[in-house]
Image (cartoon, rainbow, N blue to C red):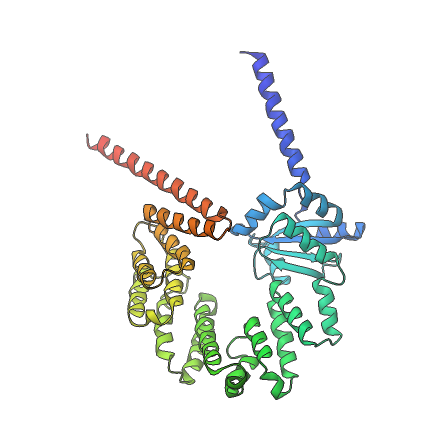
Length: 420
């Protein structure tokens, strides 16, 4: 045994480990218990930065791997904040904290005071520079969400500020507060003010849902909005709102509420009820456990698209996306491939290619999926946009295809060996 070589190898390992430790130290240093982070914030008189994340969230992983470890990010955050990570799908304390702070999207990047009260918040991934800019807004008493809430509570209702306020709440995914405050604001407007286009645009932006007071008012007084907004836009707004609101309720958690809402919708006697009901019927094959009867889903989806598919491209995209989630074996959801190819034959919108790409590889049509992946990548290059996401997906599919091929070859070799 060569002792010198062993010592040299150990030295290389230690250097590598040391480098790893230094790299980690350069990034954000996180606590993993919010109570401890708040106690530390009180002791040091600092704001708390919290990364609310889940184990399955891709943007969360990108932040953890490519943003939080960056030296300039760590230098800024470790000086200004007490930092904490909260996993919202840990089936324990993290889930309860997610509910307490009304976390509706991941990642949610929240800044709170030492008492755990909201100062500022935003949802979604970002770059190192974007994260630092977000932190600077949180530190600014004139720009953060808390300052906007205080100004709103003081009574500022100027149009420009109102738009800014609700856009900030929506970007922070403070959905419940946005809806509640908008309803109060709307109810205090005069009848002629409610019909203004900018008020309708705000209601549309906030996504007030059917069967709520604001939506009911717009629906009941749609002729007032025909004058200020336009009949076709208002009618489409009402129709689309019912379509996607009811479709979103077809889940095991809200199935009873969906059935009640569907009856109310039918009673309104809109001419498109039968079309919508047939669309919903495909999703209604979900059982009480949340599982889908995939064969029946494809049967109903095909029948619906044959009859109504050309009315709205979103029908095909929605049906195919869910089918992709429910499959994961060779040709298990092959109808979805035909759905997408029929759609693309009449409208090869580049935005539709992601869904086509997804249903292809989920059915193990790897070669065709890789062709579509290259098309997506080429489109991004032409638009001077990042190809990082599609590149990683192409690599993932290539690796998966090769591993599956090897596994199948090994199994075939075993079968031949056994038969001999």
